[in-house]
Amino acid sequence: MALPTINPTQTEAWKKLQNHFNEVNNLQMKDLFAQDAERANKFTIKWEDFYVDYSKNRITEETFKYLLELAKDVKLKEAIESQFSGEIINQTEGRAVLHSALRAPETAVVNVEGENVIPEVYSVKKKIETFTNEVVNGERKGYTGKSFTHVVNIGIGGSDLGPAMVVDSLQYYKNDLTTYFVSNVDGDHVNEVIKKLDPETTLFVVVSKTFTTQETLSNANTIKDWFLQSASQEDIAKHFVAVSTNLDAVKSFGIDPDNIFPMWNWVGGRFSLWSAVGLSISLAVGYENYASLLEGANAMDEHFKNEDFDSNIPVVLGLLSIWYNNFFNAESEAIIPYSQYLNQFATYLQQGIMESNGKSVDRNGDFIDYQTGTLIWGEPGTNSQHAFFQLIHQGTKLIPADFIGFAKSLHGNQDHQDKLISNYLAQTEALLNGKTEAQVIAEGTAKEIIPFKIFEGNKPTNSIFIEKLTPKSLGKLIAMYEHKIFVQGVIWNIFSYDQFGVELGKQLASKILQEFNGDVTNQHESSTTNLLAYYKKFR
Ligand SMILES: O=P(O)(O)OC[C@H]1O[C@](O)(CO)[C@@H](O)[C@@H]1O
Image 1: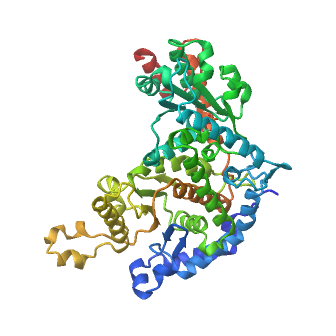
Image 2: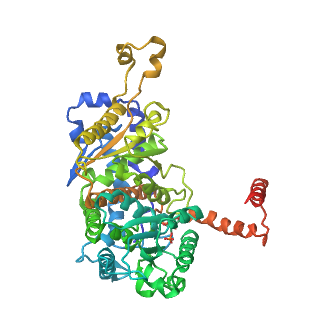
């Protein structure tokens, strides 16, 4: 069954929300807290080791009721069922969307076009486990008989961002292997990594779903050429493995068929870290930790699938985001983890969220006249407090923000942890309450400075508190955002799982590339013509 094609703006709930927005638009959250001692409890979801407080949002119980009605009007429940049961919901590419199947238990049955994919998923997992153990234990050797000390993941987009973010986030759980990621076609990237490598002890994981991506193939070829300066052609089998759906292309690159970890076209690139694309994760933190990551994601899948919408974390977060994006016209959302480990989290989510929901044609093929995908950005606190928080507090833009914190510090330094979390809590409180003119005066501020020291407040935040950063809780957190993406795509009536928007630039780049050698001359407007001439002169 295809996804429903309901224009959200034509639903009853949307109309109610529009009227309601005009009534509540100017409400102050701090007044809502003052009027209702139970507000925080009403708008908090406690689930496993997650504590999600969304009470610091510009909502009333009525708002929440209408948002839930919107979910019903667009048939979100049915859409969730379609996704999990393997229906072809990526209709523009004719594919199912089943990253959830990659973390389902071995006993699950998930049919794609009549065939249960779980046995195949588990046979690849077994291969990942065996391979990981052999590398980590030092049984698998390089071409001179030495064990591996370094792993280099060569990929881009979903074949890089997910594994890179997870390896960085879980560095506390890492083993002795050093892991690098090469993604950019900028040759300086690959050369800086090569500088740190010994060909005898480095394992290369070439990750490309299509195995046609220019950046990845260029980097893989450069690395292969460098490797062959000290090793021979047959040594490639010991040092290069690949993750791909395109088995023929991998073989013609020269990789041993035994070293191919397959994936499937029902796994989207930006949702693929749960497949063999996560091989570098497994190598870096060990198979058991990798399996716990998947287990956490599966727990969130079950929560998303089964929980009533009023206490369903991804549904609630998705609805709140719609509220700001489509009614308050908020253009962006900030993701602020109070954990340095999650340094790459916002960058990772940028692809997940913006490649998925950056669409302007609906599921009927018509251009749409309402806002879709939000801009996503962020950096860990407390660093970000000293960078861009000024604008969130006192700028003119409304920026809803997710604050993510972990109650326990991994290294157990309580002094630092208390300071970190006091900042986390203080910022959401400051964004909520602001500072009034009376408060500024009471501080004895000089008269002419008073307006500059006023904080408007009323800035929305979600507080996502998690007991501890573990592979399992990270899996839950990532899956939470994946499902939020889905919720929003369903409501906006767009297809979240294609990415045709990245193609045009790629096509033009390959034409322009030919011009640098003087073989071809294409027609350009005067700006590109001048830029080309500049580059040809100085390259
Ligand atoms: O894994 P591949 O096929 O090399 O693709 C890499 C990335 O390129 C894209 O197709 C477009 O940027 C992403 O969706 C994908 O993650």
